[in-house]
Image (cartoon, rainbow, N blue to C red):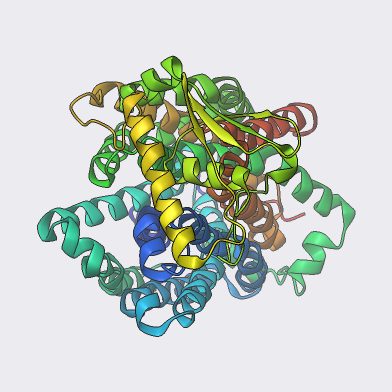
Length: 551
């Protein structure tokens, strides 16, 4: 039977909820190590590509783990609905922990060539499958132990685990990086956080073995009401499939892009676009996480009083209207020299549109040889935001920096040695002109306003807590017990795995194509807007639903 709403959770209930949350923290730690080390991963495993393409390809490998998450949701959701929540947990944590450990011993590109990135992507996919089965089980398990009227407050603890896992990964990376020094960490020390996951795996398995099965599942199993075909029951009937689709487009898609924008994309933007050094960026993000994380619990508990929907929708709306000014303010605070240079000396590429290709080269096989492509690739490599103006057909492209004009050149047909020399000469000329116009090679740490950056990052994290804090309770309440694990897992992992997980890759690809460093924000703004409209119109409030009714 459901825990009473009039009494506090007993010791056993607190123990199993703590165990579930702790194991999930460790699992998110494993998953997010890769994201936090994306720049180093790019150099280690994709060194056969140019720097820009290597980083985007590393993000694609990061995204591979997200792409397979819905399939993990189907596989492990089915097991969780048929045999129970507890034992499914053990399988997912073992797959995640062992995959992460193997990344720590995996030879890099320089050692075994193309086999290295292939093996890395395979391990990322195993991690994604495991995580696809993890979250739905953890959220369901905690909700089914929670008193009626307090599900938002109790499931909010699960919602903190992703951020705490990210925080733990950043702290471990920072500690090892500080201890070893930057050179040693970039060479081999980056492996240590992955290797340390074997210790976390041991703790997680021990903790999860002490857990009891969910009372709702136990009651349902005793009554012989478990589903024999959770996947067909969940998605083969329109009345359930309709709710799954609405949960995806009206809730989890918007929640996901706000989550990844506020934490991962903000970190990538600081390090890759604004050129803040990795250690400083990690510390600033970690401080914002410390300040913001308690608000998962605040908004989760608040959703028990005023409802889940108003809080989630408000978070999507605020993200939609504030992202562009907030990220521009982040540029002013983190790299004021860059902001000043952009205002004083705008960079423009003047080129024949027919000469300009899509500036994305994930395989390293495309050669950018036209004068337009040469100019754009050089600016992208220097992380310079630029506009493009069309000129008459056949005219050689050029770059204007303020009043300075730098002619580009055609690289097609040049001998290899001459092409390399011409490229170096062009990049040096461009670099000199950029420095003269005030464009910095790196962010000046003496001019970076740490309190302003922290304030901005904290605001972004607060939006994350608004959309994420109440959503576990809401998803659990949308589906009956017999298909709950399967039904809620799929929209959550499509939303977070595809819409959210692909955000860094999509955003940086958009930036590479347009040349505007803020244009990648259109992706989360439009997705959050979609969820706001659909959620407001079609999704009903769920906070008073009795989840022990197995309809």
